[in-house]
Each structure stands twice: as C-alpha cells, then as structure tokens.
Image (cartoon, rainbow over all chains, first blue to last red):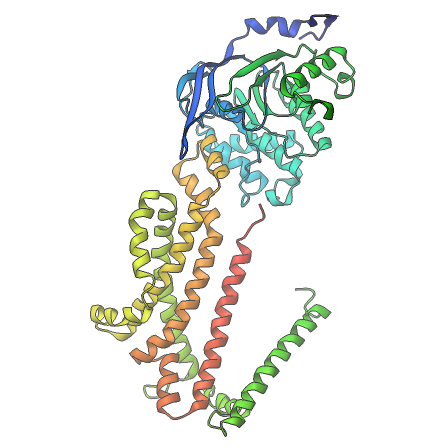
Length: 290
Length: 261
C-alpha cells in the first residue's frame, strides 16, 4: 500500500490523488443500502427517522456518519447492524440481506454496554462464546487473551467495569467487538463520552487495530465530531436534520495514511475539508450571524 | 475488620448504648407510672435469666426457649423458602413478558392486600394440621414482595444490556444467566428482605392462633395466660433481636450483590 499522494489546491477545492483511494472502486462491496426508509409508530403518529437513503461502502473503508443530534444517523447504522428493520428498502452486508444482528457485524455501543456484574475478561468471553459457537473453549480463551492484550488491558482482566475509567471501558468494548473478528465494525458515537485527550489516543488505537488487521475491516462510525470524522475516515456522510433525514452530501477525505494527528491539522487539504464540513453542519459562526 | 477498635467503632457503640439507655429509662418510667404492673427492666432481666435456663430442653411437657425459637424459625424458613422458589421465577416471567404481566398482575393485586392471617383458616381447612397451616400462611405472605420486586427488576433491564445480547447472539440460557438474573438479583434480594420481615411478624401471630411449639405460643400461653407480663416482654425482646438479625443478614446479601455500573 503506497502512501504517496499529490495535492493540488485550486479554486474548486481539493483534488488529491491517493493510490489507496484509486483502487477503492475495484474493491468488493461491503455494505449496500438501497432506498432505506425507517419510520416508527409513536403515540403522536408515524415518525420517519430517515428517508430514502442510498449508500455503498466498500470493503476496508472507514466511513463516518455525521449530523446533528436526532438526525437519524444512529438509526441508519442500526439498519446495518440489524437492530432496526427498515420500513422500506433493504440493506445488504457482506452480500447477504440484513434481517437480524449477526456476528459478521461487530458493534461498539455509545455507552460501552459492558455487563457490570462480569469482569473484563468474562465480558469478552461471554460475547465470544455466544457469537462463535463452533470454536473450542481453548480457541475462545486464546481469542479473549489476544484481544485484551491488543488494547493493553490484560493486567486489568479481573476488574469489574465499574472499576475502570471511561477510556478503559471503551477499549474493552472495542476488544469485545474485535474478538469476534467481524468483517464489518459498527461504532455508535464510540468516543462521545470521553475527554479530548483520551479521545485522541483512542483514535490512534482504533487505527492501529484496523491496520494490524490489514485494513480488511469495514468501519462505519456515527459521530458528531468533525475532527474525529476527518482524521479517521475515507468518506464522511453528512446527514440533513431530521425528521425524515436524508444524505446531504458525501465528502471524500483524500488524506494519505498513516495520518499524523499533529501534522494533519496544518495540511491545507485538511483545513479545506474541515471548513467544508463546518459549512455543511453549522450556519451560524459568530454572534454577528444571529 | 482491621478497624474494629477504631474511634469510629467506639463512637458507634457509644450511640448504640445511649439509645439503649434512653429506651431503658422510658421503660423504667412506665414501670413506675403503672406501679410495676409493667415490670421494671431489672425485674424483666431476672425473668429473662430464668427463661434462658436450659434453652434446648425438649421434654414433652417442658420446652426450652431456644427449642421454641428454632421451631418458629424452621416454620418461617420452610414457608419463606417455598414462597421464594415460587415467587422468583413467576416474578421474572412477569417482568420479561407484557402478556404474563397483564394476566398475572390482576391476581397479585387482589390477593396481595389480604392479611396473611386470613389465609390461616384456609390452610387449616386444606392441611387439617396447624403447623402446616402456619407454614402455608408464611408461604403466601412471602410471595408478594419477592414477586413484585423480581418483576420490577426484570422489567427494568436497560436496553443496552438487551442490545448486547442481540448483537452477540446470546442463547436464551445465556440471556437468562448472564443478563436477566444478575440484573434482577439485587431487586430479588430486596424482595426477600421484605418477605422475611413480614414472615417473622406473621409467624408470631400465627402461632398465637395455632398453638404448638413456638415464640407466638410462648407469648400467649406462658406470658398472657400464665399471668407473667415479664415473660411477654422477654418474648418481645427476643422476637425483636432475631428479626433485626434476619434483616442484617439480608442487608449484607444486598450489599454483596449490588454492583457499580
């Protein structure tokens, strides 16, 4: 994988050639969302969360779904995980129509969702045990160990989630999702509850895990953090405000990898993408705009 | 445990002693006002020492106080155990299924307010045996708090935990043993604690009705019919101490099975 890229800035915006991106179109499709609408019955009538969404994600891509709170980005992701059934349209993941959650799609939940009565080790083991039924006990134990060591939590394996910091809990949740080795990883505002410093190091850790797996995992991430979205993803899907949210625009992030947290913010291409996303998401920038 | 002799412990003991002294003072005052119709603490202490002579005596005509206490505890234990075995699964079922809740809840709401003593004659009619009727009464009164708390626990499982189960494809058994039961356990223990408290109150009343060996019978036969108010007071103190010890046990369990989120 080459990281060479040429960047030229023009009045139209950024144009970047990145070989990693060039072969993107030839990679197999990982997730296919066809004309998906999700409506919920509420006491006040039918509420449409997202409407007529089309999106194709290729294998190994990292895609961020960004938008304001309540814009339906989590709902859209839940149609991929199978937690929510589309009212119309269909979702294909790994070539199969999504009808229910499955171990080919790992989920990292917004609030970690660890079981508070189980130790760190047991939290991962019960998930592996449930998801990978054909593995032997020894194989499962080995998987738990490898993944806990990968997130540097092996020495904390006997602690309960209540004894861990937010960042550590999120690492457990990520290790749990990785340990069932899913082809698709779905992250629902994974770092939203973390402080800025912990968040930055979690970004690097996530990319490390992704690279260690040869960039084979497709990652979909819901976020409302523009910097996070640009730093991690290949594409950022900007959603309109709900109800009946649609895709406002899909912004390519043609920045070469590996990306450097410190350097990237000075990259003219980064700055331009950042401004573009800000303009798409926010319409008031100072008290003069009120 | 290492701080057993710390200042904090000494202060707690001090407050406890102060409370007891105030209670003893009020008691002594009442004894004085009733011209020893109610015996003084000291007179009661003398009777207490007499009562706890040969506590485990178990002759046909003469039973020691411990024999009576254990007999009451055994009835409570059996009734409470059976009641809990019945209440916990049904409560969890009610909490997990809206249909089960809607079918069972009306029955619970109608039967729950019935005084446990009202079940005693029914038990007597069914079993033709007063100790069994007492156990039946305890069984019934131990059902409600446990059932209601177990149902509440099961119905308040956070969506997050259910999502984990769905996302990783937990089997029904895994869901029950890894999520439903551990989450509901603190609520179940709260129910058990309420149940044992009620059972301990009810057994005394039950034994007054039923006769036989037990603390309730001791209060009635030896205390009231025997004309010894001191014995009634001794029984009240024993019942109180045993009841609070039972409560301490369940409070300990409650602490042991609560967890930080």
